[in-house]
Image (tube, rainbow, N blue to C red; front, side, top):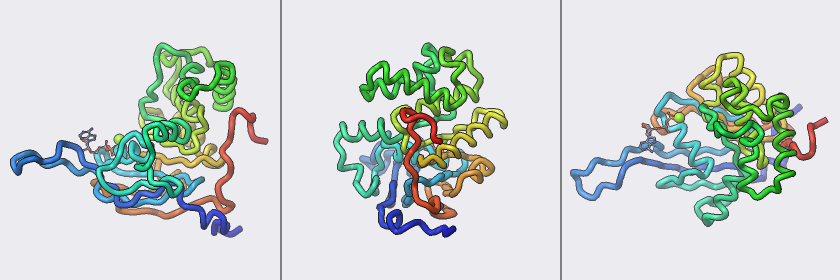
Length: 263
Ligand code: ADP
Ligand code: MG
């Protein structure tokens, strides 16, 4: 089997292309005595293709979360270009940007970010609520996703009644609720014991195998080593990149809970 992607995949624009992205925090200097803004991302250029499973690895404070927020269109760079499927994201109006955030990206965070007063199923339903999915469809899909993630027996549990690993499964199901073509996971195993962490990594692998693009943010080299590509960031710059590692047969269609488990 050849590792070279087919001609179609080779001609498609990258899913994500960052060109010399810069981001600093702090107010612009008005006088020379004002504190200078702190540069956090200092010229990040990166291409990620559909179907890749990439780890962005770096020490605490290296700019990983800042980069993830830009990738997920939660934040904008001060400088540089972000092309998504060849389209400049800065050309999108607020509605189009919100739609893209909602329908393209699925976010998974270290601290799960679940609503404590809602059940597992209700938490998973939240993104679809914003997308305007009818209630019945929402329930069916959230239930299917949780069953797929081995959480079918805990649909009505609240986050406080679940272990860390189980809460992270709920968060992953929520990230998939609107499709989650691109999964952005910021230190998803950081708060977990090693067994639960390994299970979450296995799930991310399964999602990548099912055609999702997975971007995993981690400070942990051992976690990063489980991805198919490692991009290393230090002080806001990319210092190493193991390179494009698309599946040989090109991206597969993302798994869709509404169509049931894949054969
Ligand atoms: P990482 O996720 O790799 O730990 P971050 O992207 O969170 O790094 O932060 C990178 C640097 O930017 C850190 O020095 C952090 O203190 C600073 N920083 C992050 N967010 C803000 C903010 N909203 N305002 C000011 N400084 C920030
Ligand atoms: Mg971070």
